Length: 435
Image (cartoon, rainbow, N blue to C red; front, side, top):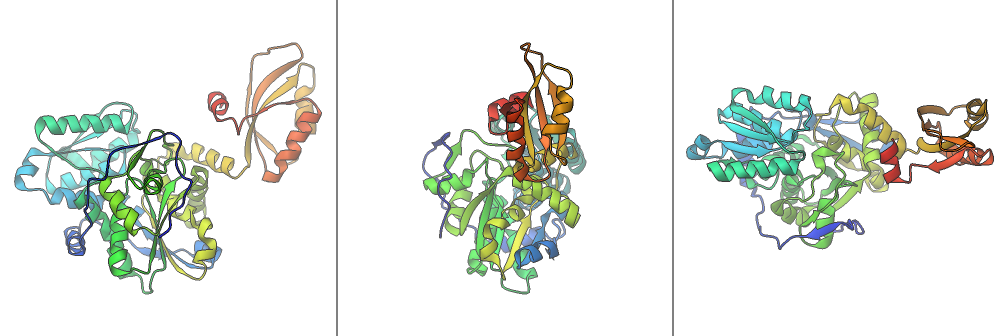
């Protein structure tokens, strides 16, 4: 097996030795599938004409975004909670989540009539809170606390310890892993042909560890590729380090797959059964979200777009092959649309921000519009700053180009007429402060 190298984040530290030797058992996975009958949907394995043509391959989508809770998380959550004893059920369960896991747990609590307390960060969007309330009904109590998932997680563990309740982990749990593994069973049963590649999103590793186990046991020639967001390569880094590693800093945009530390159990399985771990830029993920909506009429969350976003990296390998991409969820917040479009444009090199120093004379702005901008360039952001000198006045200007090749000529025209101040795209600290 081969894993990509050079993925270490300089801001990492390593915790302890691995403390698990758990590997899922096929019979237990099949038992989980029986448990989930009538609860989790048998989601379709659908061919994608657009992606099949683009890569000259048979690309199929496993549509876990079509689950009732709009993600695969219902599988593991229900399998775990259903496995509890009567005594454990009577005590109630606790979980921490800012999204899909919370919805799966809430659904399971209502279905099994078990009281659950779900800790969520205070900034969690109202839409997600309402979804959890809707699925859980009278059986789910939501506690908003802290600013981050880590804050909510700590609070949930305190409640567990104090009241003796059962904690339902989002990924590092044997029953969770076995539940998520049923995705793999379904793919093998649904596919008429032998599958050459499966691309699976990786956050904490619950889905990847379960699915890769199934293919290891039932279809060992299938290459299972794990895909992480570039800004949160926790599984890639851990496998490279040969021990589970906690990242001190991560980019949280792909929130369904951005964790600082993967599970000990999931790490042990993934390092054995995954063919490779790769990462994909967040901007590429955003472009895929837009493409899926515009071309396939599919709405996905960022984590749900990871597997299709990475296919470009495997274009030569998958040509003529049977390929499955897991579309893991569709819980996307519509308020993020503007940010998704912005990130996609930045990734494609079509959106650029500058500090422009306009000469303090009549007609300077008109000169910039007529003589500096290209005929198809658009100003999409303009914020004039307080004048700092008699000679020029700075403004932060965002420009959208038709072609990324137009950037260098644009900068050259700015410099030749003394308008150029700073290019902000490659100055992340200044960019975030000003934009």
